[in-house]
Length: 141
Image 1 (cartoon, rainbow, N blue to C red):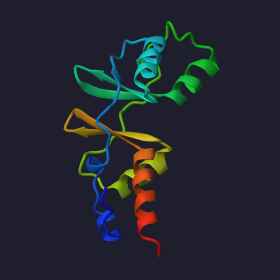
Image 2: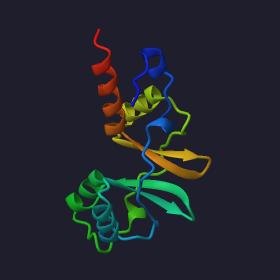
Image 3: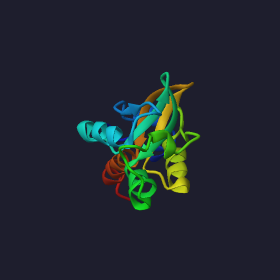
Image 4: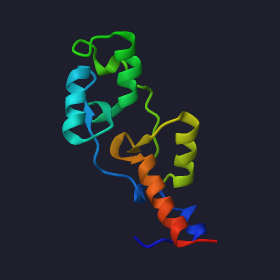
């Protein structure tokens, strides 16, 4: 990956760094089923959607805090009962600096990327950090 100068970093968009691999489930999916899908795909979250329109997100932390720690049964609890909604998201044209600010403010480690109402990717804190580490390693001041 070619590392641009700092002024170019501030103009870099989420769409250039986002992953296009993400896991989605329907709102009436049980927690148990959702976690099995996550495990099989190596995912740390699932996007919850109705007819291809994302309406929420559930993370590994949500399973612990909103299900296990309060004694809910994961075989009976549906993802729509614990999902974060409305969905906080960014667009592919969002700058990486704005995405980092949103993630910091909301304490998120990933943000869905939507183009209109369609999910096109997921930007993860690790994607942003990997890029920034490469940038600062190449430009030691």
